[in-house]
Image 1 (cartoon, helix red, strand yellow):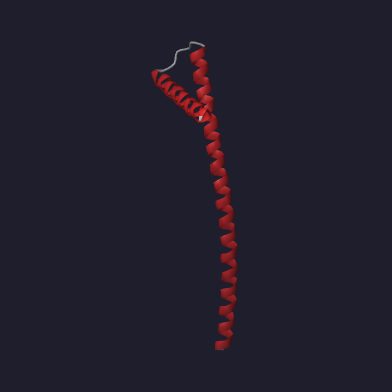
Image 2: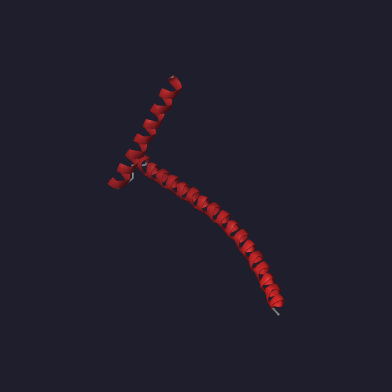
Length: 94
């Protein structure tokens, strides 16, 4: 009787162990999928940001009214580009 109970417990332990392994594998797959989706979202957000900047630049070029907030943001963006170009020039001249 005790032997039968131990066998049942062993079977349950084996089943539980297999279930844990399956769930762990599924968890890893889901983590990987989530990481891929998060990266995809970040790329799409960057594309949207760049597209918005293109629209702002287009508005400035076409002399359309641009909000002061957009103008300040574009000014900061242009200043950042200028600084990056300065750093590249310094690096290349070394």
